[in-house]
Length: 349
Image (cartoon, rainbow, N blue to C red; front, side, top):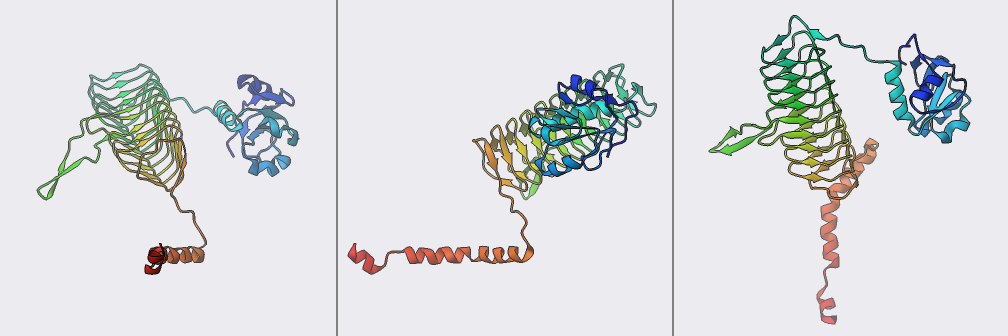
């Protein structure tokens, strides 16, 4: 349950602002958001998953955002939407706006004189900004962030706290970067010679397009020669690893703990579920879904759903499956022997 917004908004205001169809009193006001089961008369809820239909009949919410097909099942005031979850997100931003960061520079910030910083940017405590950096209008650089020389942060972008941006990396406009993110550290470039590893200099950078979001403790390596690239509206969850020279297409979403090896290209509108691993130098076409804990070792050139993760089973059943898996090779050899033509079969042939 969220904290209430004392001012609130009327259902009529919400319907007009977000192009929704209202069924109920337009003067009814809501000042907070909550789930169907927890909402009270002054709060707004939503239904996007049929699994929660039973709660719709019992909710005490002041109003519910839902699809047209569910309206007849709702006894509360409702806002009919083509996409209830998306409109819920938009209304949440209106009811609970993020506090504004005051423009200016904290006295403890260390800023190179050659850095160009917009007058209305907000620079927090213990920030370090290197030579030749550019910080765009309305950008927010939270406490403890380090922006290395030549990096560019676009207008309206926000680095929440303790973010590292490597030299010459570029972030577009309205990019949201959560704490602990490292963008532009060296990629894992090594050459083996005479029994020792030799470090390969990583001379590329990282380019991140407009409206991207980078989850906490995610790492995006700089390119070895060319840049590592995230196109516009790419969404990365927490603890994602993007290796050097990876290219991620626009509107792709990647869940937590995914690792993508170097020089792989991910298409547009892809969804990669958690704990999946993608090998290097592959091409994944547009509109591919990769299910959780999958390992991708070959390029994918057709849209669709792919997966190799093994779902959990009851322990005793899984142990039996493992025993049978261990017997497969023996069974295959026995089957080949049974299918091999005998001397008599050869004579008759």
